[in-house]
Length: 440
Image (cartoon, rainbow, N blue to C red; front, side):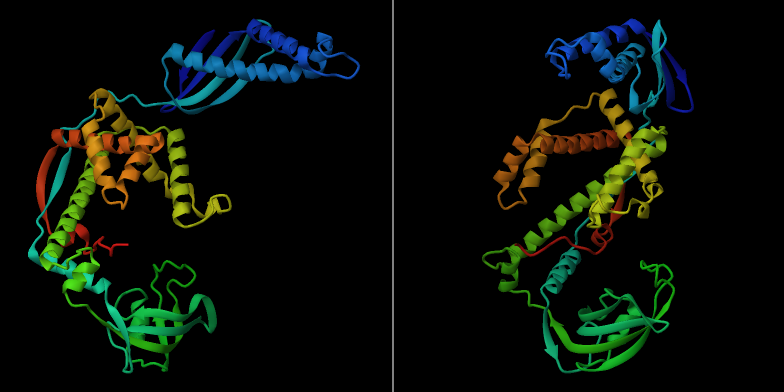
């Protein structure tokens, strides 16, 4: 077998492979003889069909099968011979199989980029430092009170902070538009769930009152068909309710999992959850900063075949998040270029992280894996069952091992990079949001 490799643009290569024609001829003859023993043709006894008849009937099909098999096996052998690591599936071109001496073909493919050295020392990272204050604790407890607000119907006009049950019909240029009508819609005035002009229009309305308001849709509104347009809404309030926050007492503490209702225990528990949330936020922010720095300081060409695969994966994830069926979804409504930048960065990061693991001999820390698994399963009602699932399910275990190994890479980079600390408030780090929910 003779192999020649030509470099094209970037990572693309063209490999020409020549194989003695005898390899194909002998393989075709063997396959036809094997077929002759089992084939059934009218007028001949089983196993007695003349080879010439089998060749006339099946020769071209068998020859093509053999050529495909020879290309597949010789392509793999040629890559090993030339010490080439391809990225993606090759394009097979110019198959010449009629030559009496040699069969030849060309394979065009991309290779993985060569990464000689990865720069880590010049990466600059800001490590968030967060101190949870007593005021932060009280702010979170206030949000927990708001989660348990009780609504009671009132006979007065609605004001800011009240809840209004409303029927509405919107028109643009006198025509009802898609999504512009609603019945028994619950709207909290000032909560920001609707456009500000719509919520403000509900202020002063009492149950049974009707009103006509004008709402201007902003130019960047998510609904393109109404963005930048003016609409008239007919409103009818059918109920007005005011909210009452619960007292911070034993019953309140019990609602959040403190069985004896002890408020000191409740505050300790809330603070512990806040610290856990901050720890995760800091970890995520650090990881993002590390990966961004790794990309900025190390320029790597991403093979287009791998980027295309990543685009496909990202698009499938987006379709699933939208609650759509990938089989019937109109892919043209989600163009590839929307995902190409993120896909390219993911591929480049994957190449860099893989090279770091290989070059620095980073191996999975089993003790870290076990502690991560224990921490993750502790949040479930039946942690032992979840633990057993990860021990028995190899796919799930491999996925978690990959996450832990990636965390080890982040720690390795942090040890090499220039890290400075930066103070953040709890509110800045969490964007005033909390993940606490009532126990199910």
